[in-house]
Amino acid sequence: MLAIVGYYLWNYDKVTIHKAINAYVGNPYIDVFFKYVTHLGDGVVALIIGGLMLFISVRKSLYILFSYVGAAIVSSLLKYIVYPDVFRPHATFGYFVREKLNLVPGVEMSALRSFPSGHALSAFALFFCLMFMTQRTGLKCLFFLLACIASFSRVYISQHWLIDIYVGSVIGVLFSVLFYSVFYHNSYSAPLDKPLSVLLKNRKQRV
Image 1: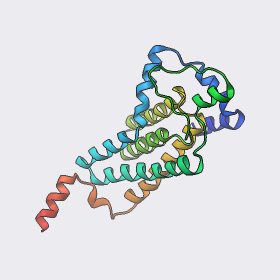
Image 2 (image 1 turned 135 degrees about the vertical axis):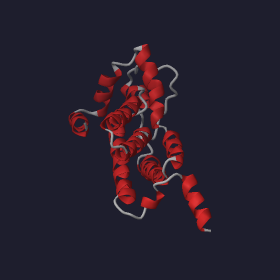
Image 3 (image 1 turned 90 degrees about the horizontal axis):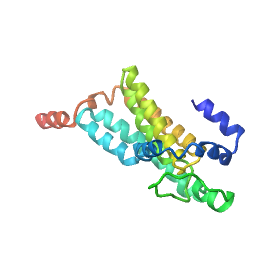
């Protein structure tokens, strides 16, 4: 998948790629689908799922939260310090390309801080954590698909360029792999693989 997207990014400029994708915008059912599925990449979703995991396993919860927060910090540094003036598609087409985009109704458009995509980063960090934590092939495929759909939605609704979601997804995956090694390639975190209530109960009994 990364190789295919990388091929297009290498051979075509981001405006050309975006125009090709934007040509498919306009079907009311697909528009509504991507308008709402894009929220799977909201950071709050990762935080909620990470919080809910406390009722299943503290280790799983910390794994998700550390992966997301670590990736989000890198994303924020890139967005607000390194590349704060990168225009998003809506602004670029409106002020520089001077061509009208097909926009999804009801989506509030942003103008700056396009690179990288925080939604793609969040989606891949979260769903790759879930992929690594399950042994079921069907669930692994589902989580990967959700990460891809949530990320692609950002291009579909013209909030990001393809390069934005590409880099965002790579950052998210890297942090999920990094913290998988931290929490699952050693024995120190194994005692945390219990619900928070059980850990608190055991601690109270020891006291």
